[in-house]
Length: 536
Image 1 (cartoon, rainbow, N blue to C red):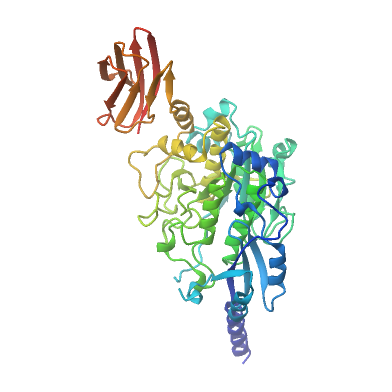
Image 2: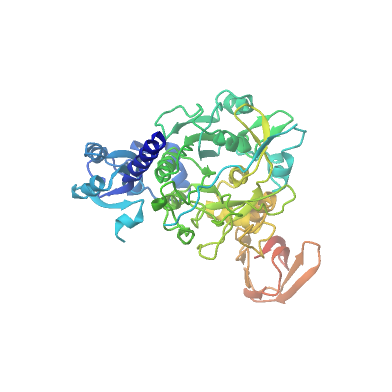
């Protein structure tokens, strides 16, 4: 009898939980907020304004805060709980029974309502909840140089030697929790340099992000970039500055976490953050009515993916783990890594071989996914007890690359985020033969830097050579019609092309050249000049 009553109780609880729906309420306007895009210091930090100005990004209506009067009225509606808000979407995430949420449509400031359960929108797939974090964990006896592999694999050590260590680059880490970061010796250097800028817990709505909230995942992710233990451990961007935002609730899987993520990205934007690292992904939910299908992983459907796209448009370089679904039924890259503007990172092992758990790309996605890969198998991380351990998961290949991109961005402050990503792809091990498992392959950060330094339009007096990188046709513009000789050599010094001409403008067919780096030399009676030429 007791078992029967317990079963009835559990069923009723489940019915009650599923009766509570999640939805985004989109608002009509941002009138009467007291803010104006003509006065951005009212709602953006100077760091954010400067970052946008440096990239030619306009401050627009999306930057304005949501009307708090509208939010207050929503909170006062019967049966409605406001969970999150988004200025970029001018939307509020609410929870309640369907009837109470539908009733919000009668409010004059409500534009439309989008239920997480798409079937309620009159316009999903069942799957077991995944482990989207690390696959396994084991303590190790650390040996000196243990972190060298994950740094040297992407040739980031050469950037560090050039003093490109992420200095003056601000990274926001969006994750599940950051216990003990404020006291661990592994982050002492970070704190001493005043590079731990603070953070916020969007799940529990508190400034304290350092208490244990069910997961130490964020602490480990941060350690990959910012951890430092003398003679034992160095993160990929030890001199960058960091904001820590908890957006993931490990106790359940619900689309409100997407809204927390977007809120955090908006906060990061307003604070002038340069890079977001997100080792999170969303595909299926506890309530199967909210779950996505693999065909929806196209960057256009998931709320979080659309938010990540706006973050990119606002000038933030968004780096996200591809996911750990490579060897299960889901398999493909999830949201927000599915968005075309998100730099999606897959995983390899210490030898550079594909990690079988790393989520794969799909022909249904608008761009090749993942973009590149880094070490995800037995990656060296530091847990909340200040112990160096090995963990598996693309959760850790993502911060390896986020830190690397911070170093590259420091070296190339005037280069756009899209260009930084493209130079990194071009440097990768299988740039000419990409696939859905490793994308463009393992990047070479020193080569990415070299590519960026060599591809600006080359000038010598009034001589111009463009485009660089070149595909099929190279254009040469000369200051006069003097006799000129052009020679192109490969990296081994072998002459691959030679042409003489005496006109002020020439087109050179380069279609027969294989992809890679070349040396181009121009000689004339007025002098000579040597350039780096990239064939893409």
